[in-house]
Length: 431
Image (tube, rainbow, N blue to C red; front, side, top):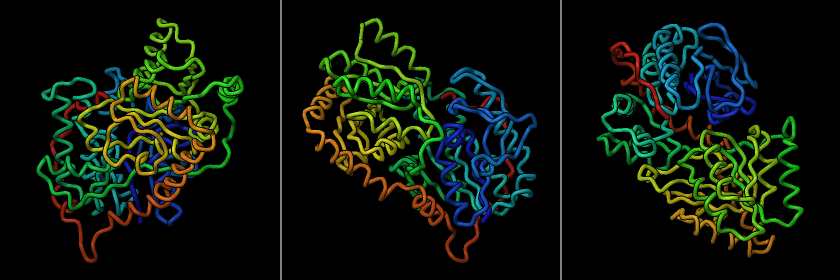
């Protein structure tokens, strides 16, 4: 089967986030399928971006074929990001017939985090007589409205809402990394009969190409001094409840050290706050490559993951780092109230539904009071859970099983007239 997976922000272990498209494509390739990932050449999520000079360029990156689309460079949330999104979607829209002929896909997947790629994805699918899959990463535009304070009447929010409804209406199948995204479909008046939950996963890797020695040395130094190490590794965004973790550091015992590993716009304000309050029990470390994550996580006594108490999280969350955490075998403090919480299911940590700093501090105290053997046993349950339920090899097969057409059925949705108005300049995603 020929598969065209459209994900604006698709990365790889060497390039950086997003990882899910890469691992699914690699597993599908192992199963004998012919997979091409369509991605922008520039993404703020990646640590390393590929370089191209043509409007589109095909490259094999870490054994997976990518079709890269030339897009403008932007900072994480500046206005140029709108131009970047527009260029990507508009290029695919104009090239839809050509892409259908070149790749002859049997399956077209729209999976760009934002939903606007559904328009060119459907156009390609119709031209190729392929099945169309829409993959839900976030609930749009609700997440932007609640997290960033946008008005529901903002033109971009209206564009996102229209795209989501269009996707639910025209996709042959809807996949989501969120366990209850089917509720969103029903709330908008659509049937969820063609919906399947396929979570994010993990891929056990060989040893990293290069150890993050500086980070390892610093963490080991504090461990050897007898500190209890609480570690967060990931992106620095307000929605990740990192303010609450920093505030927890103000209340912690003197022998507790907080380690923050990663990058993002919210890191600088957190560091300023910590400096203003003379918090000497926080260590700030640079981000590491994907294949280096498991060199860092096992060094901690416990790991932290959090999310603000937002209404949009009633559909669940799909954080990649949660499964990396569980695979590391360390106990987890999970400061979030979400359905189908894997930490609860695996009994591999302490869940604090109210992510108040005092509750986080209390959870740290409970783990600190346990013996090392008790903490190891708790973490081991998480590792066993993801190895059973979240290996990408298993998830990739589940994905294909879910989207396969019933015997003898052809796609009426993608086979119908896909003529759409020309894309108006301006729609984008303000994440």
